Structure formats: structure tokens, C-alpha cells
Image: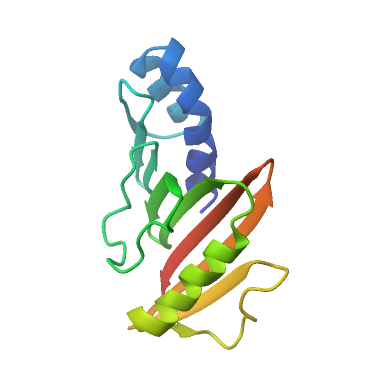
Length: 161
């Protein structure tokens, strides 16, 4: 898990690196940081994909990881900033301009009303903490949202129950 978190953090640093350095330099940097073998693919538009033995990490590709539940789509008005697949589960980070707490709440309520997701009673929905925990067909989805720096960030975690 430590290596997975390190790779995800390192992936965020690679976006600026993609504009000014070689793919081999980026791959060496990831391998040095993780003490292992990683494959780094950097696109012309700043997309970065890292594959390690702990999973895959994508930044700027606009794609959810393989196995992502089809009914968990982009929140209207948000863009997909990053996504990852690890043995522990799937994650995605969405970003939108401004305080979008109402849009996040509406999205979570739509998942319940129209997509068959149920609120996990162990986590109080919405409210001050901006956290939702939903379950469906053996999956648990945790959504955490926060307004920061004029943007709203929503982090999704999808795990098996």
C-alpha cells in the first residue's frame, strides 16, 4: 500500500515533468522513488500513466480505471483529474470550479434514487464532512468532497465489501 500511495503522489509530480523532460528520466525517477520497476508513459498533452506491480495510476487521461462501475459517471460540471487501480480497489479524483457541494449531494442522491445504490448506515451522508458511503452488489463507494482554492475536489474510492 505504501508503494501504491507513493506512486500516486509521484504521478502528480510527473505532469509538470512531462513538459520539460524525457520519458526515460520520468521512469527512472519513479523507479528510484519506489525501489522497483515501473513503466511510465507520457502523452503529448501532459497525460501520465504509471504501471507498477502495485497497480496503475493515470493523470490527465480522462478515463476511469478498468472495472470502474458503469453507473458512476462524471459528476455534471466536473472533470476527471486522476484515476488509479490497485489490488485494494479503484480510485478517481474529480475537480470543478467553485463550491459544488450542492452538485455533489444531488449526484449522491441520484445514485440512490435512480441507480440502485444504498447509503451505508455506518457513515452519516453529506453534511459538513462532505462524505458519502454507498453500497451496491458487493461494492462500497466512498465519496469525499471538499472545496479548496476556488475548486471542489471529489475523491471516489471503490472497494469490494
